[in-house]
Length: 175
Ligand code: FEO
View 1 (cartoon, rainbow, N blue to C red):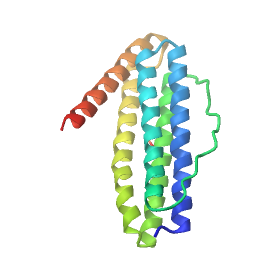
View 2 (cartoon, protein in one colour):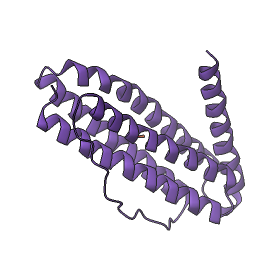
View 3 (cartoon, protein in one colour):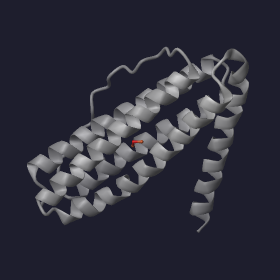
């Protein structure tokens, strides 16, 4: 039986994952407006992934007979100063999500809720991969430079990362 405290904390995580989905969708739209197609596709896919992260918690709460709450929609920012700023925001948000997952795990452990602890392990791995991915993109942006002449090359790099991720995902599906 899942506790009220654990349920509340998981519902708060739903808010965070849902917000990430809308934030990344807003970033995809901004990239699209700026003519950065590769980055737009990348962020659109990240947005879809965040929605899937949110729904995974929804389904888990249902499975353990708790009440999943659909979050209120908070307007994310819609204008950004630069590509580097966008990816710095994404990286910061992912770090915040990681901290939040760690707190959930601390609650699960303190309550000897092994079922939720086991459920959260997937998120631990996912966060490690996502933080690493965003950090590697930021490293590339810093190498290429952030001036107007660099935008084309940054966009191509992000597109290449996106395609590599898509290939990785389809290989996993094939297994
Ligand atoms: Fe679901 Fe990337 O946090």
